[in-house]
Length: 293
Image (cartoon, rainbow, N blue to C red):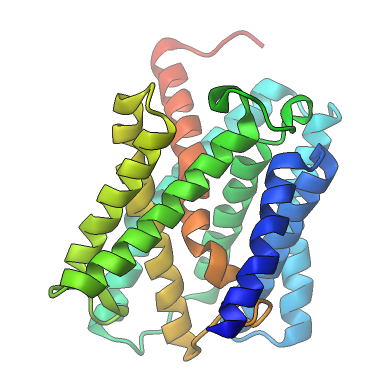
């Protein structure tokens, strides 16, 4: 517990400083390092050696940032890039709505089932690419300093999403500890309960309504979505660790595990949110016609 407290006292202020105050290059570099570190841990628990995990993580974790850099410097036509990302968005939706639930079901039936490494690799590539797309969309350099209006500052909007995820985690833990009796996923995560699951949704919703009290209906619609996919992201990581027979994905934060342990819920929410938006745009254009290029 002492290690956890010390790590949190160091990490939280540093994280908030980067999220709220860092100029765009530092902000983007931070998330780039996060997805590389997270990818390294992912490939390591998938059985790759340390050096191969590092090389693969560096390559895979740089695809989305490099594309974003090229886009910022005018190397891509905006319309065609949007179309390309929107098409890929359908696969991200497939991952979280179909592929991951199927993996959950297979693991629950047979904990020794062998997953296709290429398939898991592709799933991971799309998840981290869309997560970076999500976080980079809040990097507006002109508004990186704290503003008076939470709705006008992109960094505060991102922070409000993360606070909602934290509220869900805390609510699920404390409600589950207090009244949890019915197991949510006894094979993948034995400590989770249905009472904790719904408690997390309620606490997350309350937190977002407080942050956006001027838009309660929006908060009431968005917060449950965030809480549900945050839980799915956490379960996905728990399954991967159980398949690998490890407790933590890494040890970069003493008492807290690895980067993947800290942002597993973020990855799910941050990848499916832009995927839903872009897939919706593509569907709209397919029905009503594409804008002229």
